[in-house]
Image (cartoon, rainbow, N blue to C red):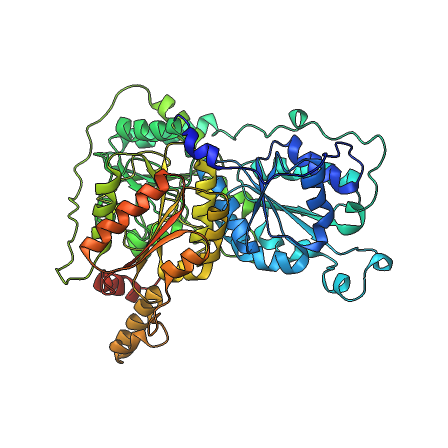
Length: 597
């Protein structure tokens, strides 16, 4: 897509005064040069003294160019920005976290990125490991014997190099590891001592061309032939789409495979737009937990192909209960390489008849080749009928979606986040960047940072970045929006504000219902009201345009027109819409009564 020059020109690097010192003279210069060699575009950070040497190198040695600093108000948001950037581009960004305290701040967002399997180069720093070099008090507090241990259970690899020379190879190795499938964050801790010491003479930096990321793993040919035969013989095959490449080519291959098999397609909100949600083979709407339409189709299936499913075992249990699925299950994923003991994000153990420890997109491509030409008719699928909430004089998310459509028309939109209950029937996912998926770890407060990262990645692309967020998520992470204001990132944030930690209200209702207690008390300790936080005011305090609370159709239309115009001019904007707090309550309580979140 052609770049929008007016938006791209709005981004101005912070000027660096005086001459740039091009000599690689200090230890931290070595680390900075490696970031440039790795062609990292940006480094998101919240400053800290433990890496003051690296910060100086980024500014006075590299001139704040390639990479360019993206300043954030909180370490958790710095990581979330890198997470959103990776989801939109498929490329890793660098993040720097200050000593143990910054790492602890950023660890929640690192867990989200780990659970979402996105690449990310996280740099840390520690006070001098040599105790003789530590300043009184603060250097002792900010020195940790094994700082990587704080995040080792949710990073793919970590290291604490003891010299600038060792750091150059550690960064090269980290970059290769984070970008090799299955991808996940890596952490490299830079000791303050060698950062501020002279660089070793005659040091040769690793050449990225000689440390290229290996090709994806493709499926075993014999087992592939077995899977192709099983799928070709199936009369009612179903394909479960999970994580995959966010490219037009990969999406086209997935669709062609479903059309060749006449397979029903199920897509998961956790993974984002993997196939068009309004395709004739697509079942209902993308889901977080199995929809009624998906359950109906699974009940009739005789073969299931899972391509990168996030929780295959959980979906099969939802669909078939304790008796299980009697047909053939085929699964392609490289996830097993990242399964650990502390976390349980390996999910329920799924029964699998044919398994490929291989790239899901490569598996889809090879299966399509093995099956040969041809296509089968689209399967007969249960009809999906959207439920219009009863008229109450209160706005709903369907009202928001229609108002947004009226302003934007057919312009391409990327949703880096979708609030609970967003009507995907009114905004079908048709292209890979239409929806970037959920945050991976369910860490509330991630939405604003993810949205800023996506806006950073897509600036000048011609796509409008629109994040629909809940009020709880927004309030936890609202100062992430300051970064969007500082760098004039075009981003529209629409808050579906029900003035409650609504998900937990639903859980309290379901618990009370099972126990025969008063369900009407579910709001106690949950309501974000009396007073309701002024979210639009908080946005304006960060430097965004902000309107709200919006309560009527007329106010909504006016606010949407103002917000979309701002984004088209290259400015971030937030609209706080007060929605019907009862919307979707009955269905959600029924689901939660059966367990889950």
